[in-house]
Image 1 (cartoon, one colour):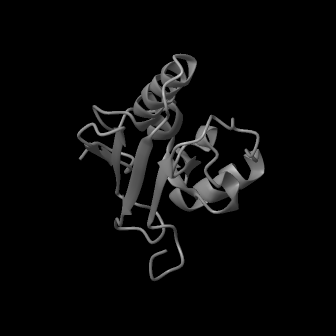
Image 2 (spheres, rainbow, N blue to C red):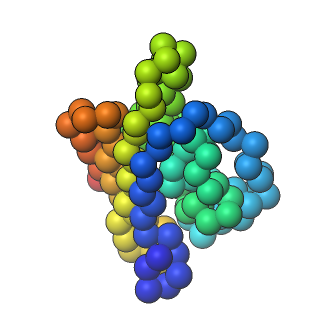
Length: 143
């Protein structure tokens, strides 16, 4: 948490089978997006697909295009696409009978508005692979 009580980062080491996203709550997601204003959703700091805490504490104002690929593009890179690629890779590994060893970290870097991060820094790695890190714009316009 930051000094204002907002989520600042989420980190996990995922080694279990996939849980699904039964913990979604549309009302909580909309409410978490309100501080961002129009064009923002309540985004998860880690995929609820992997059993992350979801609405119980992992939401933040996330630009809609970054969160779900909807709305005005604000960056060349898209969090939603990266998230789906990671989930699909995890599914492949489980189907192939391989162990799931995923390290996931999302850091929310402050912006000009309290509680609305300007950048989401995503770092993840499977097994002993070199971690991949990406800074993703969370502002309404391109940087």
